[in-house]
Length: 239
Image (cartoon, rainbow, N blue to C red; front, top):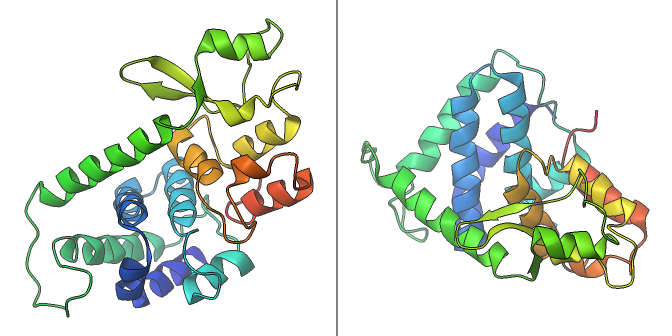
């Protein structure tokens, strides 16, 4: 399945997706679909936006047609096909036009959305997602250094910017008793493009994963490294 075909499938099932996803996750998905439409022909931005769309769709039930498509196909984010931009714009328009409608109401005739309303709503709820992630256990840079036996934490780790406390490292990356972050953490973070999209990567680690049977952050050391890496790789295009 190509990227265009996946976007078509998302559009076909959009009313059901909207009803199925939790409100916060739905808003993140809508935000990333709009970002995809704005990426135009920039391969780097397309790659990031397409991966973001896949991550936001993860909470769908495993037997949902769109979720099945994620499990059985790989996107080609760097490939800019002639229909990708057009399909992205169509899907973004669908998302914006449905933003103000209750999820359980029938479709209404087309109305142009307010110029700033959907973006403002998306920013507000996406902010709540960030607050949720920052409410989980985190470490300051100094505390992270202590967990690394005094050495700098290094690259390949999720670092979130807290407006009140400054940079914070999600604590799951530094298991008690370990000499720094396990290699599997850095590898999964690399697959999730954590340095470019730390919030999306943190959301993957700290949200329930139906395939793995729990939050990946809580399954470190309980599941094999290969299984965790495979779950991340199933959602992104591997170089």
